[in-house]
Image (cartoon, rainbow, N blue to C red; front, side):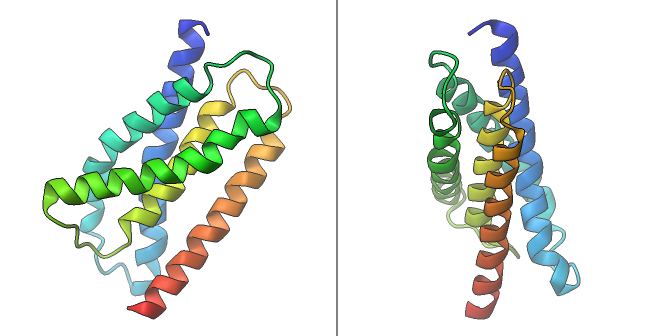
Length: 154
């Protein structure tokens, strides 16, 4: 893979993951009258290393031979993206000695990891936008469903 495409994948994956983590958190706290909005600053800062990891993973998962089918293109996003989010949450909670904020960071980062790796897989792929949009929509529905369940639990 050439360096320009690798940089584009890093930028796309990382920036989408960072933004998606904040959007996911905002979607959780918006219905509460924005109680806990101050926690978004902490989320923005802690999401930077996570977003960098997603961008690097985007380069690594796209390093295979081209062209690839849709399963090999987006399979890592569906499996590795949410896994990276949960691992990043566990690592950050370990460093912080726990994580108590107004929204579920683990689900926000799982969603952001999915979207970030989907975005990282797109550069250089023609005709994959609809599939990427479908995967992203399913991820959004799962995120919103998890938000509803978590609010009811506690």
